[in-house]
Amino acid sequence: MPPLGDVPHVRVDNVSKRFDHTCALDGVSLDLRPGEVVGLLGPNGAGKTTLIRTILDIIKPDSGRIELFGAPFAPAVRNRIGYLPEERGLYPRQKVGAVLEYLAALKGLASSRARAERVRWLDRFELGGYADKKVEQLSKGNQQKVQIAATFIARPDIVLLDEPLSGLDPVSARLVMRVIRENADEGRAVLLSTHQMNTVEALCTRVFMIARGRRVLYGVLDDIKRQYASDAVLVRSSASYDACPLVSHVETTDQRRGPAAVHLRDGATAREFLAWLVSSGASVESFEQLSTPLEEIFVRVAGQVEAAA
Image: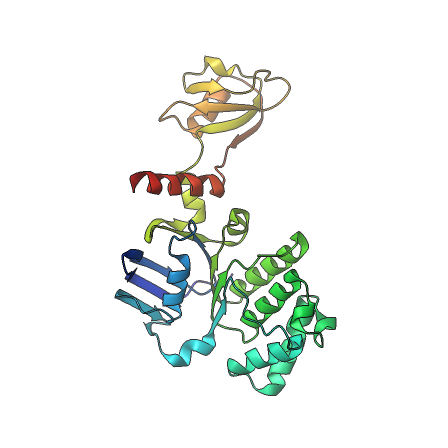
């Protein structure tokens, strides 16, 4: 990955937006830098789409500031932004190749380059033989791939993706994930809105979670997972764990047949437990601190927000 730029491609600073009596965004701040994929998470109705549309200048915020490439939004930057909405924006009765060339032309590509990019992207998504078929003749998954191709066809510097894997089979989903990763590696800034936590864990360096219009989680994914790490350690060894004063309880009853899930007391660390194992003279075959899945973190944080509302 190239080094992240000093100036964010997108900066959202204390942005708020209300619709009648509904607060869609409440003092939201985040940035999006070149060369990274940031996961945008939140329950349904949390404000994710409103946030994306304010970045695109489709919706004007009531207060706060949004900068693209270090300056307030200007019409000239539209061609440097690729947007994949959750709902499809293709022309169903038109031919796939013609639709891609037209959408590329709207982003400022000359006709010769639009044709070349259309060929390249259809081949990239294994749709080379579909250029002369109407969009409506394609399966839902292939239509999604065409729309993703349209998002990337002009090689935008900022890419906003709303549920890009919707309707895709596992093979196609992996292909799209590779494309997203490749574009970030080329220096594009990608904001990925999705409910698929495994996709976020596979692609994103940072995550931003919004609930009831407010930022409730924001930071480097690995740091967040460490913050919410389980107090359990998966161990296979010859030790008698009940003899350790650091241990709260052990889930596996027969330690000889498999690893034990050893839960530590409040304040005890995995490093201290490992030191105890070594000092006790036990042979240790495996030792792993259990990671809390991002989905569990999401559910926990969302539940806390709802309980406090």
